[in-house]
Length: 438
Image (cartoon, one colour):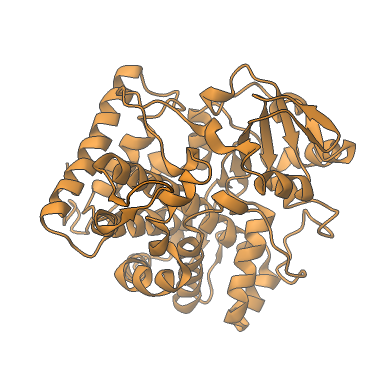
C-alpha cells in the first residue's frame, strides 16, 4: 500500500495518477460489472411510450423494455413487480413509507454478519437513526464545515494539478476525486485509504459479478477492519471528523432510553456515506459539466452570470439524475393508480422518467436551465430524501465555479471521442469529459 502522504511521482494520493481511478470511475464498466448496462439515451422514447399507457404499469421495467433481467436487490427476486413512471405517482409512493417500504434493499454481509443501515429502515426507527447523522449534512454545515474542512482545499489542489497541462479528462482528473476525498477526509480516513476503501467495498457486495465469493468475503473483512479500526482510534483520541461526531451522538428510539451508537451502527453510517457520497456525487458532477459543455450557449450564460450555476446544477439533476430508479416493498394489499397490488410485491419507482414527465415539464428531454423552477426527484422525496444532497450541491457548485475561474476558455476537446451518457438503469453518468483547458 502506498504511504499515506505521498505517491511515487511526488504527488500525494489525491493528485497522483493512480490506476485505480480508471478502474473505479468508469460508468460503463461499473454498470457492466453488475450486469445492468443499457444505452441510457436510447431507452427514453420507450419509457415515454410506456408512460403514455398509464402512470403505473404491471411488470418489471427491464422486461417492459425488452432488456435482460437484472436483479438489483435479492429481496425483490421472484416477486411481482409494478413500474411507476409519472411524477405524481412516484411522489405518492415516496410519501407513504408505511405501505411502500425501503426494506427491499436489505442484504446480508458476505462475511456472515446481518447488517442494516438507514436505507433499509422505515419510520419511526429510520428517523431515530437518521437524526444521529443528519446534523452533519444540513446546508449551513455543508457551506461551512464541509467547505473549509474538505471541499475547497481538495478543489484547489486538483485545479493546480490540471493547470500543469493543456488537456484533462474532467471525469477522472476532477469529478472522480473531489467527492471520494471529501467524504474520506470528513470520515477521518487518511491517504490512499480513500480509493482502497472504495475498491474493497464495491468488491464486497453481491452485486459485483467480477469477483468470487472468497474475494467478496476478503474485501468485506478489509472494509470492516478499516472502519472498526478507525472507530477504535477515535474513541481513544477524538478529532474533528464524522466518526468522532457519531461517537458522541445519542440514539433516541421511541420508547427506549437514549444510548450511544454501537461500533456496528457507526460502521453502517460510515459505509453509507462513503459509498453513496463517493459514487453518486462523482457521476452527477460529471453530468452537470457534460450538460454545460454540450450546450455552449448556456455555458456562456453561466460564465457571464455565476448566479446561474445553481440553476444549471438543478436542471442537470432533472435531466439526468445519476440514480434514476429506486425500489419499494409493498407492505399491505393496496389500490394504487388503478392497480390492485398485493402485499409482498415490489414497486419500481422511475425517478428519471418522473423527471421527464411531460405533464410536469414542457420539452422534458431538453436540457434548459432557464425553464420554470419546479422540484425534481433526483434526490428522492419524503423519508429517504438523500442525506448528502446539500454536500453534493456544494461540491458541484464549488467545482464548477473553480473550473470557470481558472480555465475560462475550457471546452470539449474536438480531437477526443465525444462524451455520451452511459451506465445502467440504476446508475448513469458520462463516458468521459475530455476538455481543452486553454
